[in-house]
Length: 235
Image (cartoon, rainbow, N blue to C red; front, top):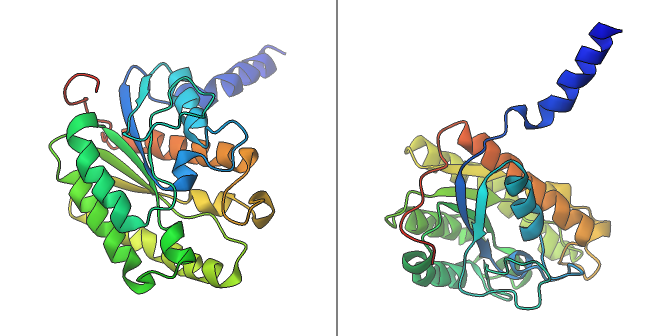
């Protein structure tokens, strides 16, 4: 009996046994409408789930960005999510935001609008790589977490999304090989076609899994020493 109880106690401890704690996570959620939280019932998208998981582990969390989701019910509304924006437009918003908000973590989920509008699709992975490089070249040492895109109900758009997603691990690995702090999170794979009611934006359950996916990636990045000290005071 004592042995069985010990096993239960160990099992209860394991979920957080390897989680990092005591860090300051200044996170820039970077992307378009999915990052902004369109389609979630409370306007929070994945951001509240990610925030709460990190805070639960004993970390200080601050979402930053220049386009707060004012309709969100969550207390930290800051985001760099721009509904309707393509990769290049998000890159421009990022360049303006970085000197002000100085995140040590950026979560990137972008490219759906490029795929749905069929904009320079063949060069989309390269354009995303340019965005990542520009972000990393700013003075704050920043962990960049790159997510795959959720599926889309439009068959042609979905085919383009699948091709884009297939290229992302290579985009990330190229930067890792160069010594950059970039990690791939296959969050889009966790969303089913039946979980995008409007054909593009996830529902609450899918957003929750995306938040946990980003959390798992950040936790893994910490084991590489990629959660860096914050740069400057809070924005």
